[in-house]
Image 1 (tube, rainbow, N blue to C red):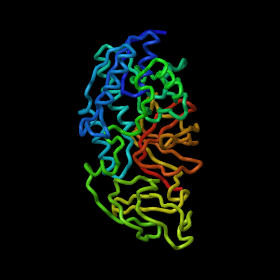
Image 2 (cartoon, one colour; image 1 turned 30 degrees about the vertical axis):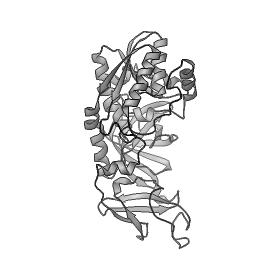
Image 3 (cartoon, rainbow, N blue to C red; image 1 turned 90 degrees about the horizontal axis):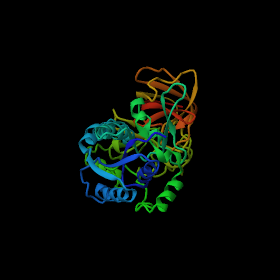
Image 4 (cartoon, rainbow, N blue to C red; image 1 turned 90 degrees about the vertical axis):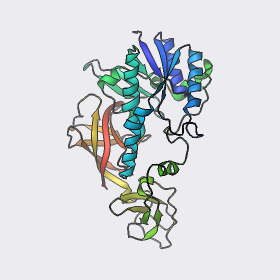
Length: 372
């Protein structure tokens, strides 16, 4: 195996720590970089990169590599957070992890690593990269642990980025990663996985958005235009949301298609022009099911769109099983997906990602949805 100078993104978590260890064991020249991506209220209880940097530095010490602290907060705010706010203000539900990977970890970080003389970069993502023997193109593959696969978040990566990327833990299951961390005495071996975006952390999501997006309360209506309550602003709700609506059941039996009086309510539509939040009763209400979607901002790993004559798998949200999909109406920047089996709560702003078996082909941002 060819030995490289590899710059590893050390987050303070166990996955990137084991990544650094594995690369060192393989004989690569390894350097660690800790990326600081957020500065506002960074010393709060919800989001403290200071603690993570201490953990990352402790890992570097155990593994026996140097670590550098690099501040990408300005780039993050311009390229990721500004877009995050624009999408929420437009009534959509963005996925900042997808944008962060494309703009920060595999652009700003990659560029910085190359300036340091790196031949490759590595992260703790659960995904894999291989070069096709026939086409010589680089392919993005799902991680071997189906419960941890993160290829969905990496689908915007291109050939230049993938050619420089390594994902060692993508070949392992999470239990194996924890076991390796314990065996080599990593100080963060049992550290809990981060569950949120750094700038939000574990804080109540609505409280955070309130600081940046003004409230515009309006009515919550059902499909028969009955007012059930008031919403706090359309930006604070997402399709398929069940909790936090502040409404109860309706006493009238059989009043809702797909649900009785005790069925839970779900957010089904956001009517921006009227500032109305539409809710329906029952998980399988037709308003929550979609047969097709249009996605824009298309990005294909190979540089070429998939062949419309073939059938693919797709995900319209993370941790979703692949759904059978037909791709159609492909242009340079957009495409349509049709689902033989209706999909639940397909949400504008999220990513629609295509797969050919384990190979992630790329995808786009969901723009419009056709109901079942």
